Length: 115
Image (cartoon, rainbow, N blue to C red; front, side, top):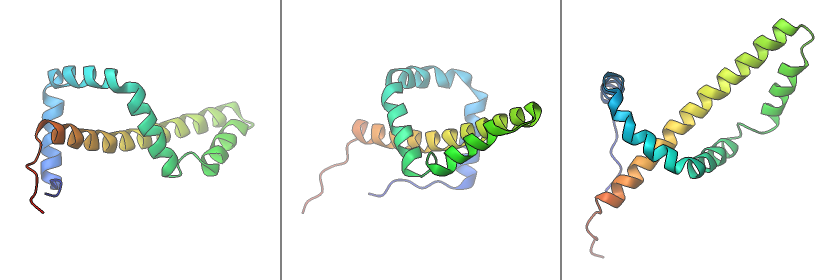
């Protein structure tokens, strides 16, 4: 059975529901705190596999740090941090979706298919 697919409207409704009930995050925070070391490893592997921390990244870090004007250097570093934060968040959400699927599969095993 293929993994469920979601419409943009379903995703928008789910995001809205998350913002309406902060208590929903209590259990999620407990799970993430427990799984943090493993999740960090998965996130790092995904970022490296996607090429986000290769030579291009190093060039951006060097360029941001090398600016002569302290104000421009600070802006470049803040921009780089913001971009990396957004990227990590997006990859983290993708990892979270797959983690949810894996947890769902272990809590709701599918019947064995006959060959």
